[in-house]
Amino acid sequence: MSEAMPLFPGGSVVTVGSFDGVHLGHQAIIAHLVARAAKRGAAAVLVTFEPHPGSVLAKGNPPARLTTALERLETVTELGLDRVVVLRFDAALAALPAERFATDVLLARCGMQELVLGPDHGFGQGRGADSQNLPGLGERLGFEVSVVAPVPDARGEAISSTRIRTALAAGDLGRVTEWLGRPYRISGRVVPGAGRGRTIGLPTINLEGPPPEKALPPDGVYAALVEWGDGTAGAMLNQGPRPSVGDARRSLEAHLFGLTQDLYGRLVRVEWVERLRDTQRFPSLDALRAQLALDREAALKVLARVPLTSTVRPPGAR
Image (cartoon, rainbow, N blue to C red; front, side):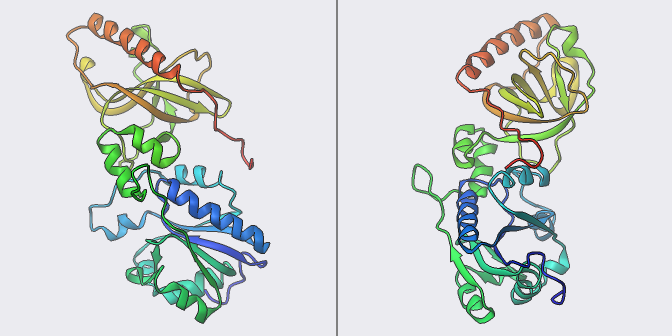
C-alpha cells in the first residue's frame, strides 16, 4: 500500500473520523480543515469509514446511526471539501497500528501535509493515535497536527453524537436541531403503498423501510418537510405502525401539502420539524378522518413558522 501513487499529488490536509451526524462540532473541524487546505494550496480531504466502526467493534450492540452512508455524504459534500475517501472498516483495518495507518493511508495515499482532528478523535488499533500523541507522531513522520476545540451548546457542554442520539430517543427535536445545525433528516425512496390515504381524502407518499441502523425519534405524528430534486413541500408525517387499519409494521408515510406531481421512485429527504401526537388506535375510519383533519391543521400551523427553502443541490454544485 505504501508504494501506491498518492491520490493527491499536490498534497492534502486531512481529517479522519466517523463523523456520524455531521453535527456542529464536526462542521467546525471541517471548516478549519478547508481553511488550512486553502492556505496551503492543498486538497481538503475527509477520510471516513463504512460500515460505522461501532458496528464492527461493538460485538452485536452497535450505536444507532444519525446519518446513513448516503446521508453523511450528502451533508459533508456541502461543506467545501475537495474529496471524501471512504475506507471499508473491517477487522483487518481495526487491527492496523496507528503508525502504519498514518504512513500507508494518510501519507502514501493522500499525500497528507497536515492532520486536523477533534480532541476526542483517534485512529489505529485501539485508537492508538489520538490528540495527545499525534503531534509527536507527526513530528517524526513529517506532518503537522491541528486540534480543533469542541463546540459547546447553549449550556456550555460539548456537542457530541452520543448526546444527540440520547436527545433524539427522548423526542427532544429542539436540541437535536440545535446541535446538528439543521433539522433531523432521513433520505429514502418513495415506494407504492396500500393506497388507504387516498380513500380517506389524504393521499400520501410511502418511504421505503428505514434502515434498521438508522436512529429515529419516538413514533407518532409529526409536522415535517419533504424535499426532492426540484421541489419542497410541508407535510404531515406518520412514523410507526398504523393500528387503526391493523398494520403493525413501522413505516414512514407523509401527506404533502399542495403536492401535484408523482414522486414514485424518487429519492426524497424528510425532515422532522415538530411532534404533534402519539400513535393512536381509532375505533372507526370516521374517527380517524376527524383526527387527521386536526393533525393537518396543527401541522400547517407549525409549518407556517418554517421557511420552505430547499437545501437540495444539483449534482456537482458547490
